[in-house]
Picture 1 (cartoon, rainbow, N blue to C red):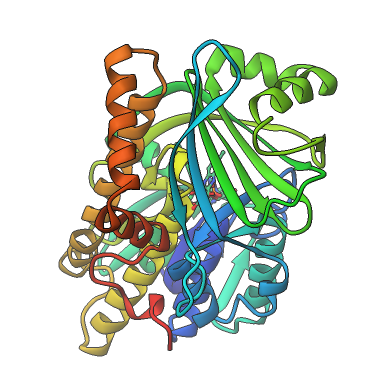
Picture 2: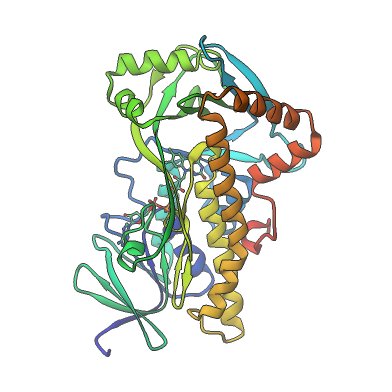
Length: 407
Ligand SMILES: Cc1cc2nc3c(=O)[nH]c(=O)nc-3n(C[C@H](O)[C@H](O)[C@H](O)COP(=O)(O)OP(=O)(O)OC[C@H]3O[C@@H](n4cnc5c(N)ncnc54)[C@H](O)[C@@H]3O)c2cc1C
């Protein structure tokens, strides 16, 4: 074992979750190696048009870790969420509920952040982090648990010994498959088509979600007269739409969003993502923990997948810091089980909630149609239910880790 490289924590996956996990650990004095197959961590290739709705607590996490910087100038606060349903025959819509997210005392509940900007900020911070060694152009192939640590083998013949192995290799985790981990899996038979658009009218910070039978379409405010579109559609039709000519695509988009955006033109390429629910049954083992999309991939209709991953980071950091303080082994199953316990409810809540909403709305059944209208009208007229909805959008529920609180 003498020729092995040694580190305290090895992180597999330099996406947004892996990169921020590395920063959080390094800021708290851990020695970290971060491994990613791209030529740089948080690689920007082919991803420039993506954006995410992130919650107030996610923003606080980025601020507390020194990543937010001047991003206020670049990210758009969401002032209102409007939920509507398309009427069956016509292209008009019925408004079902409206949530005002502006709070005079607190910061906005959610922001739209653009992928390119967040990855640039993460890369800058990572490069300045003394405790992080970044290994790019290589990936983790396998791992074996050894005495007091794990031996992780990379595809460049390097082997690294770490006390803890943190896995954030994204949806359909190849590492989880290699070690035969079991998933709860459901193919939604849907894809999400993602693009940025320009439009003539001002969006005023409003986010709209309109439910069609094939799936919901969301229009989310970006800086300027621009919006991000997330259009979920039945798989076959969705692939067809995503591959159609620009003019045909725009024509269909304009019809779907005629009540919201005026004079739309494309501001980016369009990208397509197959949608599934994929939840790892056990996300901790001795020496090993899965976080972010590798542990839980959910439907994007609530814009919560990344927020869930960011909350993983905050809780795991706190458990590891507290454990190390009292001399615990940071890879021990006892310590990792405490993390599992803390994160289980949030994972369960969001995966079942997004799955249920998608099932309820993506179909044409008359009874369900009536029920969902009733349900949303009830929420719309109840202050308590609205507050619960907004707390969830802000990421403010359950026992919050220190990194999610204003310091
Ligand atoms: C259409 C759509 C819209 C969405 N909108 C929102 C939103 O508005 N708000 C929100 O909160 N969430 C949203 N999400 C969810 C969000 O995109 C994901 O939760 C988030 O990107 C997951 O990040 P990650 O770092 O876990 O995974 P990834 O971004 O997939 O990163 C995984 C990384 O692991 C690396 N890797 C892979 N294999 C290996 C290996 N063997 N060894 C080492 N590295 C490896 C990859 O190169 C990659 O860099 C949306 C998702 C979709 C599909």
